[in-house]
Every structure is written in structure tokens, then in C-alpha cells.
Length: 199
Image 1 (tube, rainbow, N blue to C red):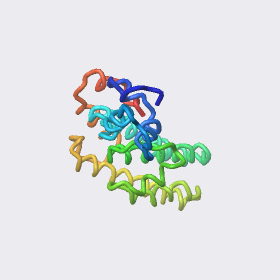
Image 2 (cartoon, rainbow, N blue to C red; image 1 turned 180 degrees about the vertical axis):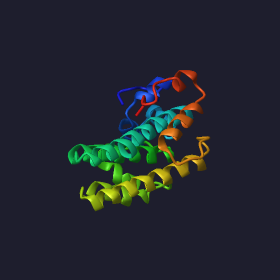
Image 3 (tube, rainbow, N blue to C red; image 1 turned 45 degrees about the vertical axis):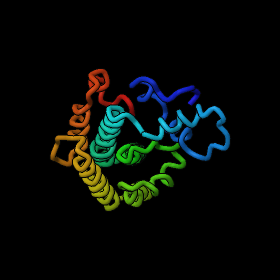
Image 4 (cartoon, rainbow, N blue to C red; image 1 turned 120 degrees about the vertical axis):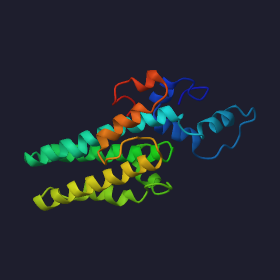
């Protein structure tokens, strides 16, 4: 992280890479005679402040909606299979981030994200569906399958939003929930940021 304390402002929490926070709380501490690092680590282990967690969830949910439920559909219908695959990878990336945030666990560097997700208590079983999205091809039949998987993932994730009571929306539309979650943020500076900020 390159800092001598836990983030001391909402903006520092928002912009500190999750992989840096994850690195700071992982592994064993073999020596800390003054206890300074351990004190910082104990603070970081509490997870994100709730406003920051909600801001990040809302941003990633909005990007899931944009890439998966909107852009993928449009691109695949135009035969732009390469661009459609990129949109799909964006959907998967942001879905993984949302899953970590719903567990209030810092997401590790991307190459460890799937492995770490398996140990999460909530939504870890979505790994299979997310992997399927990246492995299926782009034939007409497979594209239909992908649309169904995207919708299933969106439904499961929005159900968890409702379960955690971080949204007042009742539908399964990711975009609607992204705005609803943002509206629950107490800090006006964070609440009034661009919806995509913090992803």
C-alpha cells in the first residue's frame, strides 16, 4: 500500500486498490516488535466502511448491467463476436468484484480472484456460471445460453442485495439496483459521485 496507516478518508478508501488491501491483511506476521503494523492490519481486517462498500457495489453493478445485460446483447446481435466477448469479460470481472464486496472481503489480484472466491461464504457457487460464460463459444445456441446465464447471475446477485437490505428496489434489474444502492449512501460527497466512480 505504501502508507503508514489504514486509509484515513473516504476518498483514500475508495481509491486504494483492493489487491493492495488484500495483500496487507494476508499471510503471517513473523515480527512486529512495536505492534504498529499489526494495529494497522487489525483495522484493515474490519473491511470497507459501509458507505465505501456500497459505493463500490453500486459502481460494479452498473458496469455489470452496461457490459452484460446491455452491450453483450447488442454486440452479439450485430455479429460483433470479438467485441461481444470483451463485453462478457467485463461483466464477469465486475461480477467477481461484486461478490467479494457482498462478502466484505478485499478482492485479490485478478489471477487469484477465482481461487479466493471459492472460500467466500456468500455466492461462491457462482464461480461455475461465471467460468461457463468465458468458456462458451458464440454460436447462436451458445449466445442464447449466455444470455440466460447472465440473467441468472443478475437475479442471484440482486437477490443478495435485497437480502443484505442495501437496496429498496424490488426488481432484478442490475441498473435499477445500482442507483438504489447509491441512494442509501450516507456521506453526501460519496453519494453524489458519478455512479461508475469507485469500480
